[in-house]
Every structure is written in structure tokens, then in C-alpha cells.
Amino acid sequence: MSNPIVSVIMGSDSDYPIMEAAVDMLKEFDIPFECTVVSAHRTPDRMVNFAKEAAGRGIKVIIAGAGGAAHLPGMVASLTALPVIGVPIRSSNSIDGWDSVLSILQMPNGIPVATVALNGAKNAGILAASILGASDKAIFDKVSSYKESLKEAVLEKAKRVEEKNS
Ligand code: RP5
Image (cartoon, rainbow, N blue to C red; front, side):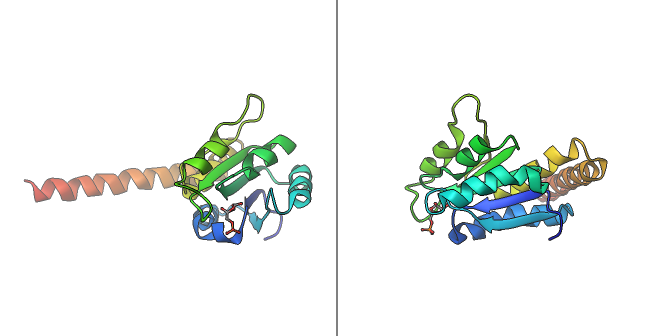
């Protein structure tokens, strides 16, 4: 995709089935993105280069997913002033998901990572759009419409449940 403004990275291709939900939301909002594998532990030099060069390449938000000893989002956040959204993934090396959540969530003061729920890649895509939407009216309007559609869907569900019990 030309001129991506969001970068979706993950520690392994085994994370992709979860991370695809972030990609899907970026597509829905017509936000140009890139998507690749960057491993904090297996390709540390690639991670450092990626994080240091991302802003200069025009990236505005980074979504980083990892599981188990999930150091990728925090390490990337330590290397760039760009906002980093972390997606904890329950992966093959994760005990129960808490390890992934806490590895990404419990960052030290000074290096924040906006951590979404376990396997919450969909929300990561929406949050990235919201961050961009603060300074881009077209994206803001798309996120607003999306949230409006959620409201309408819930009201429809309420109607169906109420009809069953009337
Ligand atoms: C983490 O290890 C990755 O983010 C992935 O969640 C997990 C397992 O990786 P693979 O062994 O499947 O490559 O670094």
C-alpha cells in the first residue's frame, strides 16, 4: 500500500489470525497501512531500525501485537515518539494470556503503550483510527459513523429481545 500512515506489526506470523482484525478495521476506514512481522527477540536489529525509521517514513500510529514474553510493543515505544497500541495475544508460548497482557500493560512511567484487551486487535484498529481522526475530519467522520452503526445494531437487538418477551 502506498504512503502507509499506520504500521501493523507482530512478533510472528502465528499472530496474524488475531492481528488481521486490526487490518480489517483499517481497511474499513480507508486508512493506508503496512503490515509485517518484527520480532523483538529474534530480530532485535530489525525492531530497532523499524522503530527509529517509522516516523520518518510517514507512519503516525503503530499497532504492535505479541504473545507470551510480549516485549515488542514496549520496546518499540521506547524507540519512537509515535503512539504505540499494544495487542496482547494468547499464543502458543502464552500460559493463559495474562502473561501477554501484563507484559504489554505494565509499562514504566515515561514509556506508555495503549494496551487493548487480550486478542483485541479490532479495537486496536479502531483506536488507531480515532487517534488519526483527532486531526483528520474524514477519518473522524468514518469512526463516528461506525460507532453510530453499533448503536443502531444494539437498538435492533433490544427490539428483538423485547418482542420475544412482550
Ligand atoms: C511471540 O511469540 C510472538 O508474538 C508470538 O505470539 C509467540 C509465538 O511465536 P511463534 O513461535 O509462533 O513464532 O514472540
